[in-house]
Amino acid sequence: MEMRQSLPLDCLISVFSLLHDEDLIRASTVCKEWCHAAETPWLWRRMCLQKWSFCNVSQLLSDTGTHSWKAYYLRRSHLEMKMKTGRSCADYTCKSLRGHKGRVVGFEYLVGNDGCSDVWKQTPVVCSASTDGTVKAWDIHKGVNLWSSPAQSPMQDITVDPVQSVVISSDNTGTIKTWKAATGEEMACFQSGSSKTTLLSFVNKDSSFLMVGTVLGSLVVLTCPALSEVSRHVVCDSFSLNLLRSSPDKKWIFTSIVGTDDRLCHSLPVTGCCAALFLPSQPARLAVIHSDGRFNYNTLSVFDLTMKESKYKKETQAQQVASFQVALSHRSDVILEARGSSALLVTDGNHLKVYTFKGELVASFEDHLQPITALCVDSFRVVTASRDLSLRILTWRNDPEHGLTLESQYHLLGGSFTRSRGFTNVACDYSSIVGSVESVDGNDVLKAYTFDF
Image (tube, rainbow, N blue to C red):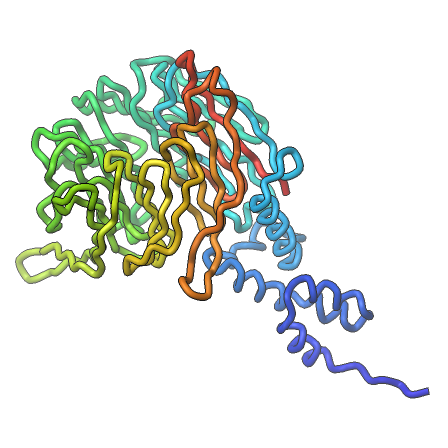
């Protein structure tokens, strides 16, 4: 009887590195030697890094102990399949978070699932602020309220500092407060003297700050959570500073006026800003949609920001690296987001458009019957919220001709129009989606959709 000699382990591993996950699993059932080779951690680590290079997978096993690269790959792939198909009950659960007696003016994830080590076990916590004068924290898996702050003047804005585990709120009297995320205990209070404020949490070199845009055009910088004033600058005198953005390298703060004036900070050669963001994969690359003076047409310009230093002064420089026209029918409702440095997303009424960095329109979607009110983007999907009381889920894919683009998948419904007027905002972490629904009776509700592992 002829005996067939097995390949050496190193050779088997080299061959198996050419297989996809399903083929690798099938190969592991052939014999003991193949099973041993197919279980090699290097193979599954390699596939993880190839599929999720956007994630800091090096931290994967730091808190998981007995888990393996293979278990992580299979668990996360299973989760992404559920998020892509979106079958009610089978793939996700929906909780209604009720308790506010007013409009929800904003909400933020305090604790979320980032898709890395948190994929094993994480309980997402969302904090919300309302015109009823309260800040509330929610366990969105259980659908329960964790704590609620004492009622005060109607809230206007909310943000969080996850590093410090702090929630920050502002009300219509200009009072800014910090709250302990675990208990809701008040930590500090600051009187801004402004009837309307815009908040931006900012962490730089292990120090936390709060940027505050005021109704009179000032940018106030506070420490966080102590709320001690660090500086105050007049950016646009007598005009409300209602747009704040921070760059990924934490060296730049972009400020502007949206919807109230035709001017933008003189550092950029543009006028009439209606949307702006820093591209997430670049240290200081800013995209701005602004007026070009023609009916229904605007320009999307992209700038690289640098600081030129001489012996006696520092000078800000903005080099334009791209510019193209975008047709907009609803200029006041425009939302601008990005995925990496290659895909720019623009909403216009009920349309969602995907552009390349050079201005090529690669996809356009009209999945909603009414205007899009909010947009959430991550490395796996895009979620749009609309006045038609639905969320639309789209997933990223690579197109051979156009590169990165989107595929429209399914709707998540927010309830009945007899009780609701539509979604006003949306946010998501890796395994859940939360949207705020404007209620007919004035008591807004949060809808939390959790995808099960």
